[in-house]
Amino acid sequence: MNKFDAIIIGGGPAGLAEAYALKAAGKDVAVVENYQWGGTCPNRGCDPKKMLLSGVQARDRVSQLKGKGFGEAPLVKWSELEAFKDTYTSKIPDGSRNGLISAGITAIDGSPKFVAEDQISVNDEVYQADKFVIATGQRPSRLNIDGKDNLFTSTDFMNLKSMPKKVTFIGAGYIAFELATIASSTGAEVHIVHHNDRPLKGFDKEYVDALVKQLERRGIQFHFNVDTKSITKIGNQYVLDAGDFNLVSDLVVGATGRIPNVDNLDLEKAGVEYSRRGIQTNRKLQTTNPNIYAIGDVVDKEQPKLTPVAGFDARYVADVINGKTDKDIEYPAIPTLVYGSPELAKVGVSTMEAEKNPDDYSVVDQDLTKWFTYYRTNEPIAKAKVVFNKDNQIVGATLMSNESDEVINYLTLAINKKLTHDEILNTIFAYPTPASDLQYLI
Ligand SMILES: Cc1cc2nc3c(=O)[nH]c(=O)nc-3n(C[C@H](O)[C@H](O)[C@H](O)COP(=O)(O)OP(=O)(O)OC[C@H]3O[C@@H](n4cnc5c(N)ncnc54)[C@H](O)[C@@H]3O)c2cc1C
Ligand SMILES: NC(=O)c1ccc[n+]([C@@H]2O[C@H](COP(=O)([O-])OP(=O)(O)OC[C@H]3O[C@@H](n4cnc5c(N)ncnc54)[C@H](O)[C@@H]3O)[C@@H](O)[C@H]2O)c1
Image (tube, rainbow, N blue to C red; front, top):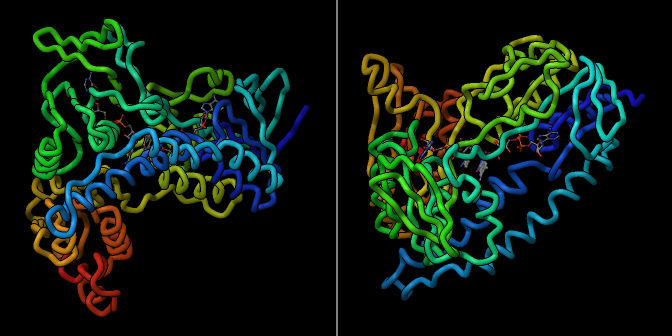
């Protein structure tokens, strides 16, 4: 029998970070992956999405300066941009697998099943380990409606070889907003169909409404309170039917959330409990079997399911396994960001929570469009709501602009390090940059 100190199931950001951290501590480690080494983020998530968004960003920079040095901005040529994205993603699976092997970590291809509490079987071989770490992530959930097989996923969308003329997204969460913005920059007619009237739930409503208006100005059409009943293929087109509403398009992408990969592992044989929200863990990320941990997106947790959170989980569990900590996991403030143009970002105490507790928090809402950073690029929308506690310490923020992805990170640092206004004021930042605006935000 093959024996290891630790076996990790899933070779995505969580699993790979775990493997390297345990190997660095001298453990004998194996990782099992059943699809693309590297996982969702670099193959079919964050990274390809952000490469495709490069086209939107370049186009918008030009379009904002129309009549100020530029003419009409050209549309994004999808097939060229998609091919550019492929030059990055195509190298990920082999690169990720080879990286493990070079580090002396065993890479096993296949679908594992637990055959005992400390053993898995992969391709008819049995592997035993003292510790297991489950890091199998999530996959797109599919609406349970007639014609659900006609729905494309975010992965299918990012791999399209040509962009259809008319594209519909069902759902109004991160994926729908981001991919709709990309599709729209190619000149496609884009629709977002949502079952209620609260898109991007969890973000400040006023800012979401402003974002929706901005995307409508780009030509994206929103249809709220539409409960999709079926998708029927007629010829080369798809008919979305919701009773009193229907829409014909060339492509319908389901973007109604993701579900954890907990099936097919025979977790029952290892005594690991789970639900449709993911694997149940305690605050040490131990499952109901104390020698089996779960990390990253597959865990049933309240924290957002994001790549840096997966890495944080992995480093923490490595410390637990290596005996470096016996404390419960404590997450810092975690920034979340809807990419696009503009970007909507938040971190820490939400504006909703602050408004509900006016004795504890105050909110400073600022329009930034006239600030130099945004004026020079003629940004159509730039806003910030910053939440302070009673000691005037920044504890949360919601931002909307094309610079939000950078500024939210500075604010995250300020929140987690409890930086004061004076500390920011006494730091000399390069000027003029979004960082040098911090003294006016905090
Ligand atoms: C379209 C999209 C855009 C995103 N954009 C962002 C973003 O901008 N920023 C951000 O932080 N996050 C983003 N995310 C989320 C991010 O991709 C995930 O949070 C991150 O990949 C989680 O890492 P993980 O290792 O837990 O899971 P995954 O990356 O999903 O990796 C899990 C791995 O386990 C493998 N696996 C599954 N089942 C088994 C099995 N039975 N046996 C063996 N292996 C198995 C999978 O093939 C996969 O390789 C995005 C996700 C999507 C879908
Ligand atoms: N920028 C980022 O960090 C980023 C980007 C993309 C994805 N992600 C990760 O991937 C996850 C999944 O993204 P997502 O956009 O699929 O999920 P999501 O949970 O953000 O949004 C799903 C949306 O679908 C809606 N919905 C559910 N059922 C519906 C129905 N029957 N009809 C119409 N709408 C329906 C929900 O109300 C919600 O608005 C995110 O939660 C996040 O963890 C992160």
